[in-house]
Amino acid sequence: MKRLLPVLLLAVSAAAPADEPKLAADKPEGKLELVATFDGPMPTGVTVSHKGRVFVNYPRWGDPVEFTTAEVRDGKATAFPPDINKYDKSRPGETLVSVQSVVVDPADRLWLLDTGSIEFGPPSGPKLVGVDLATDKVFKVIAFPPDVALPTTYLNDIRFDLRKGKAGVAFITDSAQKGPNGIIVVDLDSGKSRRRLNDHPSTKAAKNFLPIVEGRPVMERKPGEPPKHLALGSDGIAISHDGKHLYYCPLASRHLFRVPTDALLGEKLADEEAGQAVEDLGDRGFASDGLETDDKGRVYLTDYEHNAVLRRTTDGRYETVAHDPRMLWPDTMSVAADGHLYFTANQLHRQKNYQNGKDLREKPYALFRVKIDAGPVLLTGAK
Image (cartoon, rainbow, N blue to C red; front, side, top):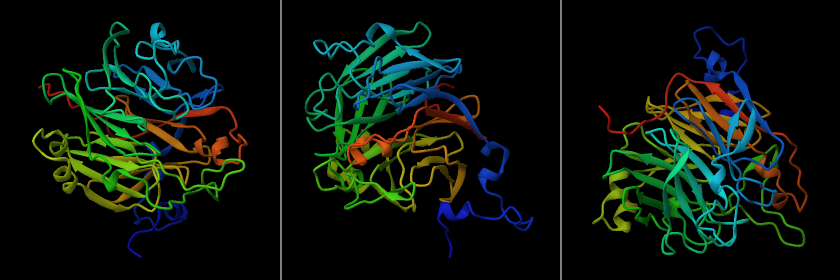
C-alpha cells in the first residue's frame, strides 16, 4: 500500500526502527499549545499580524454575538475595531454584519470579510473592510454588487497578492449551500470585483458527501425533516508562496484543487477557459475546512474528520503537523511571523443543525498553535 491514510499513520508505534522516518507530529514542532479559549459565540477565523497581534471573528450563525470581530489580548477577546462593530440592521453597508474571515495581508493590514448574511440568509451589505493596524482605523471598504454577491452567496475566506495591479488583488471563496459556488477576484485599488470559476465542478460539494467526525456520520439533521448531505462548496483557500497558484477545496469534498492565478486574473480569458486550467490534486483521504501555505511552498490543510492538521509537501506527500482529541473541527489557520501555525477549533459539527435540533457543543472553544519551521507567504513585491 503506497499511501496510508493519515489516521493510520498516527498509529505507528514509538518503537519503530530508528531508520524509519518520523512523523511531523513526533518532532518538537508538533507540540500543541493552547493560546486562548472562548466562552461566548463560536469563532471561525483567526489571523496574526506581523507584530504578533491576534484577531478572531464570530459569524452570526445563531449564537448571540455582541461583536463579530475581536482582538485577543492576554487570552481575552475584545471588540475590534469598536467603531463599526455594533451591527445596525438599518445600516448594513456601514457596520459589520457577520464576519466570516479575518486575514492580515502581506503589508500587515487587517481585512474583514463581511458576508452580510445572518444565519446563511441572503446577504445585505456584503463587503471587504481594510483596517490599518498602525492606526487601528478603517482605510478601505469594498462593497460587493449583486451580480458578484448573489442572493445565495456566502463569502468564506480570502487571500492576497499585493504585487498585482496598482494596489494588489484578493481572492475569495463563495461556499454557497444553494446556488453557484466559485472564486471572487477583487481589485483592491478600484474595488471592482468579478466571479470566476462560477459553478465550476471543482468549486462544488461532492455528491452525497458523508464525512465521519467523532466516529459518527455528519449530515444536516433538523427536527421533522429528512437528513441532508452537506452541500457547502469552495471554502478553504490558500495562495502559493510564489503567487502562481491558488489552492482551494469545497468543505464537502476530500479533493484538493488548484488553478493558476493568471487564469483567474486574465481579463480576456473566458471563465470556461479558466476552468480548463484547474488541476485536481486528488483524493486526500480526509476532508478539510481551512487551508494555508508557508514560505517554503507547502500547503496546510485542516482535517476535521480526524482532529488533525496536515501538510502537503512540495512533492505531493502528506504529513501530520498536529493531532489531538481537543482539536474538534479545526477550522481556519494562520501562519505567523513568530514561526507558529495558529488555528481555531470550534466544534462546528456539534451545532444543532447537525444534531436534530440539539446543541451538543461544549464550551469553551479553543485557539491553538503549533511550532513550524517556516513563515507566512508575503506577496508584496518589495525588494
